[in-house]
Length: 257
Ligand SMILES: [Zn+2]
Image 1 (cartoon, helix red, strand yellow):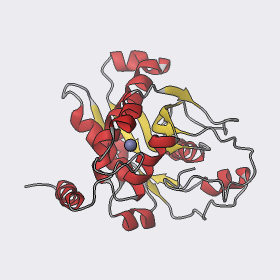
Image 2 (cartoon, rainbow, N blue to C red; image 1 turned 90 degrees about the vertical axis):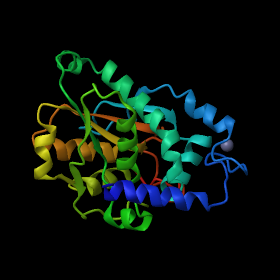
Image 3 (cartoon, helix red, strand yellow; image 1 turned 30 degrees about the horizontal axis):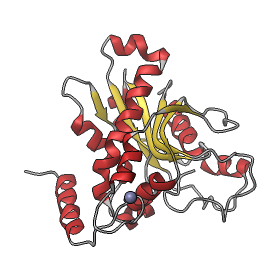
């Protein structure tokens, strides 16, 4: 019996077939992702990433690509343009970020060598955003990554974080107000805590800009007793946190901060 998530994925795939085809990265007609944009995704080299300056409590993080050009095009098309088919192209990018984070996060070396499991915790979508899109892209991206990993790797998806609904629209807020605005925006579902016990916990998001979202995810997990988390993303910007309020300058699309 297929799960509701698999049924939903199948229905979206059918819907995709009826859409006019264009490259998710650059809009070229006749192809879902042109060779040039696919090439940019393929050469992803994940690097440690931190906002400048890093907000207190920001976890160690790795991002695979700069959030610009075809990368931005693909992420916006995927997340907000109804292009769920691009999950298949973005999953290897996230898998690379995850692989480098697990390889390079020194405090986890002994634990991973001893067989500690890895728990992927997607940053939650706001309820309204999830309803509007009809799916949860980051959770589905994690699911797709997991489906491609060898069975002997102890990696699992634990959707432990939920939004509390306390967030105001971030547009137009100054840096310190943004950080304050997100504090308390997430909490951990108690019934999911068992899935994180003893695991190396990796928070997953699509794009990181100011770092406030990843910091809030780490704070919420820490307040539930889950310490020493790291974060991985598909892409990152390097907009300075102390820049003027970004209202007009904020990239359209993922809506992450
Ligand atoms: Zn293209």
